[in-house]
Image (cartoon, rainbow, N blue to C red; front, side, top):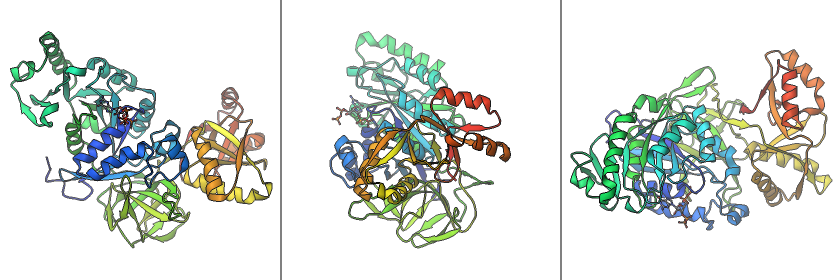
Length: 525
Ligand code: G4P
C-alpha cells in the first residue's frame, strides 16, 4: 500500500494515540499493533507494565502498588514502509492532564470502544480534547467475540453523543460466539478470524462463502443488515475524516488479533502524516529544513539509577541530530542536544536523528518546561499545550517549618514538571497546590518524601475552584485584582488566577465582572 509520494521522512510517519475507557482493550490492542510492526519483544512488555511487573518505567512505588502506569511512553514500530509513533497515555483517570497534553503531540487517534458498553465517560472526555484540535479519529469496536450491542446502535450512539459522522468500513459476520469475521462493505471481500486476516474475495453478502458461515436462523437478519449498512451508512470520505468530522469504523477483537490489520492499514493509508503546527504568527510545516519542536511532557527520575529529568519533545519540522545546538525560545539561550533518546515500552536508545512526527526524550536538569519551543534559531513559539483549571485545591502542611524554602523549590520543580500546579496567593499566605485528579496528591506526597526528604500533608483550602483571569483592559484587570486581592494568586508563570469558595460564588463574581475573562484552560507560554 506504499504510496510513491511518501518519500520524505515526515510523510512516512504516523504519530497517534489510543483513546479509550479503562478495560476497553487499549493494552491488548497496543500489543497487537506492536506485533504487526515486528516489535514482538516489546509486546509482552506492555502487559508486564500494566500488571505492575517491575519494568524500568515502573519508577515509583505508587505505580507498582496500584498496577497503573503513570509514565507516558512512546512506542515506535515500522509497518508497510511507515514509521508509527504510538504515544501511550496513562491509563488511570486521575492522570488526565498528562493524557490531554499527550494528545497535543499526535496527528491522529484510535478510539477503542467496548462493543458491549459503547461510549463511556472517559472516552467522551478524551474525544472532546481531540475535537478541540480536530484530530482525525479511527474507531475500533472491540470485543466482538463477546456478547455485544447491535452495531447500528453503537454507530448511532457515536453519532449522537459525539456529534461525529460514522462510516463503517467493515461489518461483523456473526456476534459473540458466532463471530467469525468481517465483511468489507466497500470492496466485497471478507476476512476470517481463523484465516489470519487474509482478504478473501466474495461476489456479495449472499455468496455461499459468506452466508454459509452463519447459523441458518441468523442469515436473513445478516443480509438485511448488510444491505442497510451499505445503503444507509455514509461512505468513507478522506477529507471529512482528516477534518475530524467523520470516523471510519472497524469491528474486531484485539484479543483474537482480529481487525487489527484493517486498523493498521487504515492508519497507514488515511491517517495524516505530521501536520503543520500552529505557532505564533505562522504555521510551521513538517518539511521545513530547520528543526523545531515543543515539549509536551516532563518526567523526572524515570530511571532510579540515573536521577535525570527527561523532556519529551515532539519534533515539528526539519531534522534533529544528536549533538546539535538548539535555541530555547522562552529564554533565548542555546542548549546542546547531546543525548536525545528514543523510548520504547521499556528501553531507550540514543537518537542519532529524528524527523517531524518523532518524539525524543531530552535529558536536562530543569532547563526545559512543558510548552517550551526548541528551534534552530528562529523565534517561533508553539501554542496549545494546555493547562486545565484544577478541580482540587489544597494548602500544603509542612511538618518541619524550617524547610519552607526547600519546599518552595521542590514545589516549583513539581509544578514545572506538571505533576501539580502551584499558586502563590497575593496576600502572602502559604502556597496552594492544584490538581485535576486526587491521585496526583498521593504522587506529590510520595515524591516529596522520596526525592526531597520532605514529609508533607495537606489542609483544606477555603477555595475550591479557580480560573485564570484576563481582560482586554489592563486597568480593568488591575482593578479587579486589587478589589479581590485575598482571592487572587499567581501561577508558576506569574499569570493571575481568581480563586472562589464555590462554583456558585465563582458564577456570582463572573456576572459582576463582565469585563474579565475567566478561563478554565490556559495555554502554556
Ligand atoms: P485497557 O488497557 O483498555 O484497560 O484494557 P485491556 O487491554 O487490559 O483489556 C481489558 C480486559 O479485556 C482484559 O481482560 C483483556 O484480555 C480483555 N480483552 C481485550 N480485548 C478483548 C477482546 O477483543 N475480546 C475479549 N473477549 N476480551 C478482550 P482481563 O481478564 O481483565 O485481563 P487479563 O488478565 O487478560 O490481562
